[in-house]
Amino acid sequence: MSKIKVLLWDLDDTLIDFKKAEKAALKSLFLDFGLGECTASMIEEYSAINESYWQKLERKELTKSEILIKRFCDFFRLHGIDENLAESFNEAYQLRLGDTIVYRDDALEILKKIKGKLIQCITTNGTLTAQTKKLERSHIGELVDHIYISQVVGYEKPDTRFFDKVFEDLDASKDEIMIIGDSLSSDMHGGIDSGIITCFYDPNDKGTDLAIDHHIKDLHEVLDIIDI
Image (cartoon, rainbow, N blue to C red; front, top):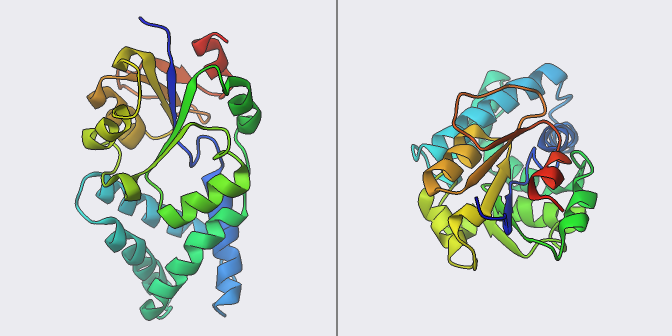
């Protein structure tokens, strides 16, 4: 195998903790919208609904604009909240998600250590509004060479056309490119289908039967894989 020259980093729940940002955003916006307390059980309900909708997006069953509103319609319906609030709530939610930045496994320091030695890219399915704010506030955007947000690219991971757009900018062969991410459906399937090296970030030890190249529980392990 050729030496790895390019890292494709997923953002949410790989470099930064999405669940903590999601929780903080929901709790604060419920108060802002006068909806009372968003309890822990409600957050778990929303998170499950949200995940199911993103999976529909990956399967091309719905568009991104559809899932962003429908997830809140479903959630609000469960709790007797006016579904007409879904659109304005979602707009506020996109910005609020970037207010809470919690790094996974010293992610920022790891990126700093790699900077200048390998090409580093962000590859994310999140929205342009949310991801732009996260990348600015986390300072991750300053440390990477390229940023690929699906809403801009025009395709969602795991679609190979998303990765084809990424490859256009990289002076590297596929056996020199590694994707690191927590999602089996978008990151690992996308990496496998595109013929690049795959690194499954699995801090909760969920496991997988997929034929991945590397299986890690801590982002520090990436440093061992790339040998710097």
